[in-house]
Image (tube, rainbow, N blue to C red; front, side):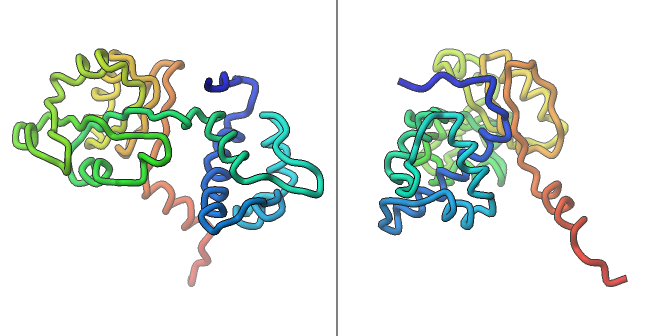
Length: 212
């Protein structure tokens, strides 16, 4: 049974949990059974004290001097993040980006499965992207409602993103990963995360030394 999310835990803590899970998964692939907050901290650039504090929000995971059992901690974190189940995801946009997202094989073993791809372009509707048949966006809300889809990814041009977001929210989607280079407005009960490589590049260039 999934653990009930707690609104008292800071979102920044929740944001670090996937990093811990990824590092632990890599350690397990290396054949490791036990790790420590110090080792995780060195791998992630996060202090061991911060890691222990973050994990303490969710109960006891290790013992002083013995470290963390990797399999147990992976299992526990997957339950905390509710990725011990499979979430079906809708992708809106079948262009170059949407096609690449739909072909990406790394979602399924992390708790997600791309299940539908939608587009408004008549030239794309009915075509195949790997195993997917691109669906008409006009049917998107009915499909989302009937399948109780809660997660969607937006991979459309910026000028179309808000309209797509409105349709998704109306259909019952509660979590949106937005690849369009624009902020979208959604109700408070809907979670939005943004992926814009240019924003991250601009963040980094601030710290680069100028030759001038």
